[in-house]
Image (tube, rainbow, N blue to C red; front, top):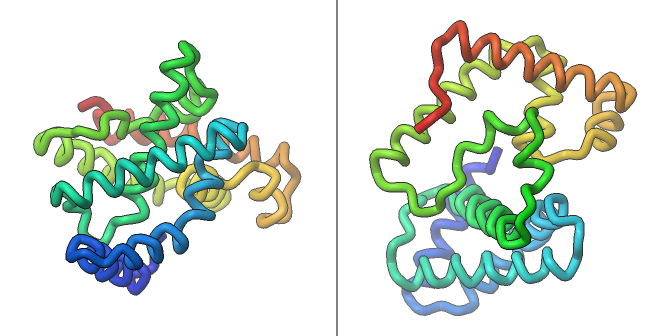
Length: 196
C-alpha cells in the first residue's frame, strides 16, 4: 500500500516536472528506482535485461508526462509498475516464450492489466474487477490472505514470506495453493467475471 503522503509528494514532483523542473524527475527516479528495478529483475532474472526494461520504463514515463496525458493522480508508483509489467510481457513475447508468472495457474486472476492503452470503458471495467477481487480476498482465512497479499501485492518470494511469517516454505506454498483454490470458489459463488 502506497503511503498517502508519498503519493501526494509524487504528485507534487510530477507537476514540477511537467512545468519544466528536470530535478523533479530525477527525484522521482531516485525515490522509486530500487523497488522498480527489483520488481523487473524478479521477473526476468537477468541484470542486463532488467536494466534495459528499467530504462525503457522511464522513457515511457517521461514521454507520457511530456505529452501531458498522465492522469493517474496519486497513483504514480502503481502506474509506473504497470508500465514495467507490460514491458516485461513484451520482452517475453518478443522471445516467443511466455514468462513463468503469466503461464503459472496461480497468477491468471491477477493478470488483469496486460494492455497499457486501455480505453475508458475497459479501464472502468478493469477497476471494477480489481475492486471485486480485493473484496473477496478479505473473505479468505487470515493465514491464506496474508501469504497471497505478500506474494502478489508486495511481490515477495516464498523464502521471504517464510521468514516473515515464521513458517516453512512448504507451509507458505500450501497456504498459497489453498488461497487460490478458495479464491476461485469465492469468484464462482460471487459470480464475478474476470474478463473484460
